[in-house]
Image (cartoon, rainbow, N blue to C red; front, side, top):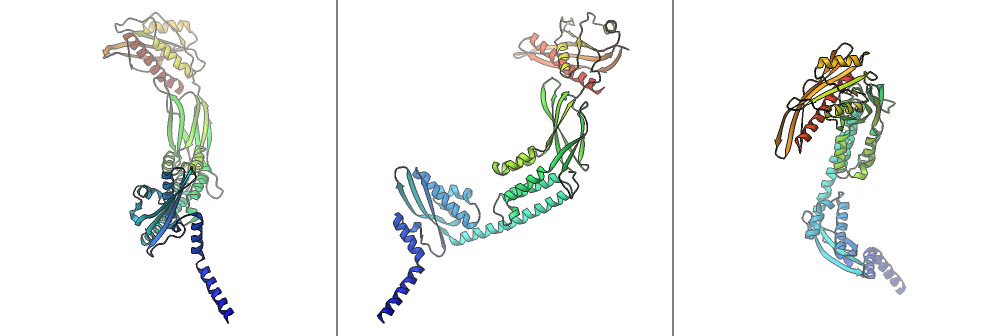
Length: 468
């Protein structure tokens, strides 16, 4: 009988041990590690939730910050949303979070040797407030999923209408939305949306047709890899980038904006008179607004493949434009006069004029004539070139010169005409061109003004010679 009772008592004791093994193991563990019991088994009221944050670092202050971050990470996991940025400052400065009635009720610090400090913080929070936050996060997640799904439906509709750039924009807008918080659908996750957008971008192809490098004209098509739908891409914005020189002879990068509209292509014609006569035009799908937006909203590492795909949406068109007058003899004379009307012995305007025409592969021979009368100049040039030639004849003179504070300012005015020596006809006239320049001396300002006049006149004459 005694044996039976003893067995029954042992069984009851074993059941009690099993039922409390978790708390017992936590207690034993904390005793073995020399930590307070609340580290592994915090006690709370029924209306509270407890989180224990742990931080370890050589400096106690840094260990404490890591413990705060650990608490925030546990709250984030509990409610289903990252709350770090929203509450980090409040928690680390006040030791509390008002929205959750969070307070640090216990803390424990110990050192492990001389190089490491450990801090444990016990945070108690209001269970109802946490549950409310979890509910609001869930509702926001459902709302976010619905908004993303609507964007994807619009994207699918745009793709079927051959409007790929709108499709890409909608997927990237969905990706930005997905980055704002958790989603409940796999295809709505940020990584999947970015990968899908990258796929659409990578399928775009630019191609050239009807190219005429000698005139720098070409038709540019935007296509996509598709076996089921039409390959042409409509309403795509495309940049054409090329090098040019302005009227003062200074190089710069210019661009034109085109759109494939309802045809899926456009025709490029270089309307810029300053287009460098030999070079390349780079056509690229214009993602500039999207690039700026996703760069501002999303992490750089996440969007790197998307940006790389955007960079690859381009094609180069090399060209070399030749003037119709190439090979013909061309002579040039620009006579310069001072403010008193006297002919100057040399002309900086003529030197600049011929040098910049040479940049466009237009070879010009400088001539120097004594006569200032146009008829006499033409007669003498006809004797020198009996087989005919183009004569670029001009005059430029000082209109005003004055001192403005520490600088001298000179205004010059003149014109250049293109003559056909075979019949003495005027083919082109720049009309009156004014140029203004300043310098530390009057001579320096006058020289700079003549140089500027030569650049402007060259720009205008070159445009005519290449349009003939």
